[in-house]
Length: 161
Image (spheres, rainbow, N blue to C red):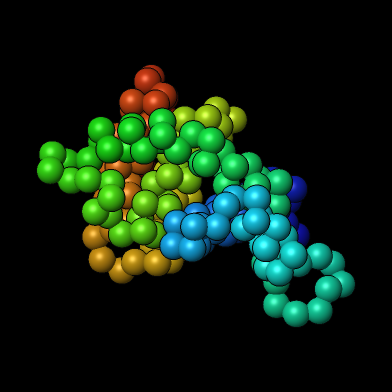
């Protein structure tokens, strides 16, 4: 069975989201800027037809929008994320990977009205499962759901909420 254009788009965006989380993590740890990290991913991690080697196939423009968007909107995203955390919790205390996931998902919920809430939350919970086996995916689900309710009042809720 061949992949539909919608399936292809979803698969490429899924790869872009995972790559964006990895890039955000890398940026936080290394202090490297978004432009340099985008170039590094485009030059060394994303492949093109006929290129030898192991490469990731991703929606590179979506990836770049996620990175640049998180950087542009980080203050707004971080403030809203912090407001959804339980009392006594600080964004700075969270694991760097969790922060990267929440920032990317938060940016999409805040600035990408073209992506349904349910899709954003599901995608980033799936990414959390790729990195964590403990309570983190449930934490990310709850955090992004609360973020979505604040950022998109009247929007669709997370699955199971």
